[in-house]
Amino acid sequence: MPLLTLLVMVPIVGSFVLLLWPGSPPPLRMRNVTIVVLVFQLILSLVMAGLFDPAMPGMQLQELHNWVPNIGLNYSLGVDGLSLPLVLINAALTLVSAVITRDIDKRPRIYFAMLLLISGAVNGAFLAQNLLLFFLFYELELIPLWLLISVWGGSERAYAATKFLIFTAVSGVLILGAFLGLALLTGSVDFSLTPLDGERLAMGSQLVLLVALLIGFGIKIPLVPFHTWLPDAHTQASTPVSVLLAGVLLKLGTYGLLRFGLGLFPDAWALIAPWLAIWAAISVVYGSLAAIAQRDMKRMVAYSSVGHMGYILLAAAAATPVSMLGAVFQMVSHGLISALLFLLVGTVYRKTGTRDLDVLRGLLNPERGLPLTGSLMIVGVMASAGMPGMAGFISEFLVFRGSIVAFPVATLISMVASGLTAVYFLLLVNRAFFGRLAITPPSDPVADARLDIRLAAVAPRETFPALALSVAVVVLGLVPVVLGHFSEATTTALASGLGGVG
Image (cartoon, rainbow, N blue to C red; front, side, top):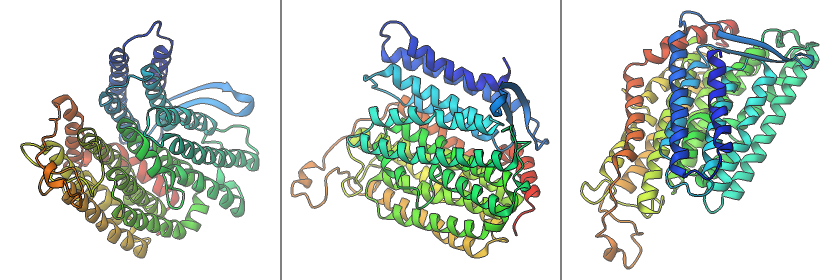
């Protein structure tokens, strides 16, 4: 079986194996089987990276089979410098999500099957070279993620899961409508990316279809004002699901924006690029200010994602070779950093029973607190704030350096707003991790009697995934050529095809 098909089918087949497993196997066995499947998927992803030629900007390792040719649906897969890093991070973070999943006593068979199904669907979306095939994979992850939130989420999980389902369903309708409209207006019966050429359309038609894609993918990213589903989903989702959602699934939106918005409608994109830059700046500023106002650690990290996703839209609006490379770096670095932060917030919640910044104090206490968790949280905070030597610095520098020539005002606003990242995360670290160890509000009259507490230690097996993500964040920051080596040729070609807008 060809390599790209294996990347799609291995987790999907693994999902069905778990669902059809006879009897009632214990949760630990289901978890171990899931981890084995995901390790195999990671190995396949690394083999793909080894076979990839970084000097070639176009699609590689392509597979093409007729499926339903009468409606233009072909099984067409390929990988380039834009999709390769995202397939790798999907493999890594899905594995992390499975590893940190513990104490799943309620329907473990379905839980782990849904994790595998999402991973396979995401691979398919990143590798698909047919618009209908991309849409099928894009929609395939919808119900599994809804189940993961609605069944294994918090007390208000039904509301959060329903809101997520409605928003994402609208996103899918808009994306499918744009794809069908493109085929109808170009007179094509083939939904492969090569025959579908949006430049053949009148500018008015291009703009209508592009706006549909912008809103559809903007919901998934999510960009202001389509972001409201995200904080609720993260707040109610379990830690492994939040890691998967922030680290991988949001990238379906940014990937679609770059691959289809930029790729199919370059003329229309250049025309509205100044408005996209303004939209990006608004999202960055709003996400940062909203994060500052939060008292729930998880909602703070969720709102930070809204701001950091705005950088990718800014980079795409500028469409310069440097900004496009920065967009890829931002997708990867945000995936790693947000996964690390959500994982650590989950550890704090599991050990203390709360995420309230008005309640937590002194968790960095070396004897009775969570010193290693606090130290890793500081690493994640520094990376998210763009500290030199971390992945966040490289991605933001490339985005701002590539965008400032085209849109200096929007870029400067985004740069100022990026400084707010340090503000809200320093608030988080200062309130929750420094001071005298306590888990009661200072206003509580019996608080003094509850200060002498000792939190349960974090086991090494619980710490290892966070350590691995921390190392990845630092390595990518110190040796960015690891990622640039794979993506630069593709992003430069994409930007050259657009000619940039600056």
